[in-house]
Amino acid sequence: MPRSAQTYSLRDALREQAQRELLRRKQASIKATSFPDWLREVTPEFRWDWNYIQYIQRQLQRVTDGEIRKLMIFCPPRHGKSAMSTVRYPAYRMEQNLGIRVMLGCYDQSLASLFSRQTRRIMQDRGLRGGEIRAQDEWETIGGGSFRAVGVGGGITGRGADLIIIDDPIRSREEANSERWRDKIYNWYTNDVYSRLEPGGAIILIQTRWHEDDLAGRILASPDGPNWTVIQLPAEAEADDPLGREEGAALCPERFDLPALYDIKSVMGLDYYALYQQRPMAQEGGLYKQAWFRYATAEELAELEFDYILQAWDTASSQLGDWSACVTAGVLGGDVTVLDVFKARLETPELLRAVKEQAAKWGPRMILVEDAASGIAIQQMLRRETRLPVVPVPAFRGGKLSHAQSNTPYVEGGRVRFGPGAYLTDFEHELLGFPTATHDDQVDAFTILLTRIFSIVLKRATSSDGSGRPDREPAPPTAAVDVGQRAKKQRPV
Image 1 (cartoon, rainbow, N blue to C red):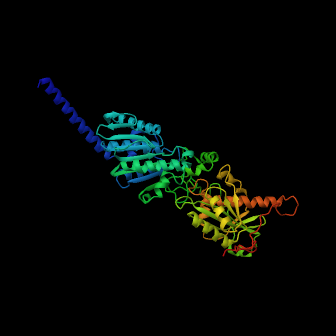
Image 2 (image 1 turned 45 degrees about the vertical axis):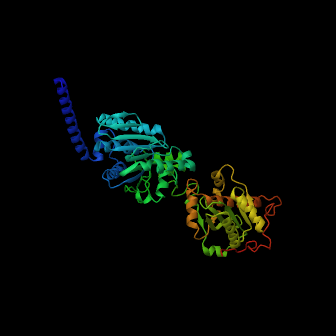
Image 3 (image 1 turned 30 degrees about the vertical axis):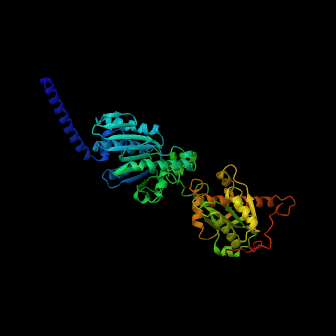
């Protein structure tokens, strides 16, 4: 071998040895550096000392230490969760271990690539980027580690990951309200993303809450839910705040004080509770407010003599799908008292039987059934097999929300009361969660009921002959059907 070649090889070997030693010392120093200290070193111009930021830092440190394997972070928009947890935390972990493989997923490829470029820039500035792959959505470190960024649905087969971060898997309200899109995200997570996690690896889900059935909600409702640590940081503090704030205090008053949050709330309406409070269902309610609810005691019901009783059904034919729900209410003058709510997942034969049983229990003047889907079949069978007073109701026009909104003045004005019963807790929960909750079958039946009742009340108030009776009053059930007569002093049985 020529002397120049020998000299070059020796010089090259010594340089590589020196670089490895420097890298070893640097990694040893990084491993001894906490994530908060590293943040202040890498980006000193940012504020990393806010209370909620430090709280998230401590939880991420627990991931680093192996104490947590699965972490969810729920935080309002524009509060720095991505800048710290999605962009810088992976860089910190890759400095600690240059062989680690990181995978990032976002609602689309453009956002994932943006975060990837920001992390890559940090690693470049730290002198740790290397390898042959240098694309914006996939790159390597000098120690053989890698970073891969994908959008929802993006191909990641054949690639393992020691750290997986999913940030903002939902782009918009339209996507959040689409069951098809929520299914797509969940299937992508279960079939593609989660199968890439290496043994002993960690996964972090960072998002604002859009829907009770969004990716976080569906994971938490699954058998894997108890395995996750959840950080929930609402913009306005609620009871048992993890940061120790007083109720109503702002999460980051330096950027979003209470007047700013109230302004956002006035513009966003119901979505504020999902995106800023991390509760897809508002505590005081969505469309319906807790403060509107009025109640009748058992003693008061015993003294009432209702003019008539009505039932309204929202039907579903599959045991695996939505619930079938029946709301029963008594009417006295212009006031309504909900007496009972029945709901179950039933196939058509069981549903038919349930309609008959609820009719026998309460003796309604009318049984309102939505004139759509399974409701049509139920109407036909009931007419063929019974003489129950079944009345078809046209399907909603203009959407469920607008239909329900037309009846809220009666609830808010105290014209509707709830009687006692086992139904009440679940019924109230669904009312308060509407329209963002997963299920709305009881709400649909309630809306059908109130629409018919108050249309009758309005007709009575404006009857042409001044008799105080509607121009067209529904006929009572015939005597051949033993389901009760026109309700006088009707009570639960």
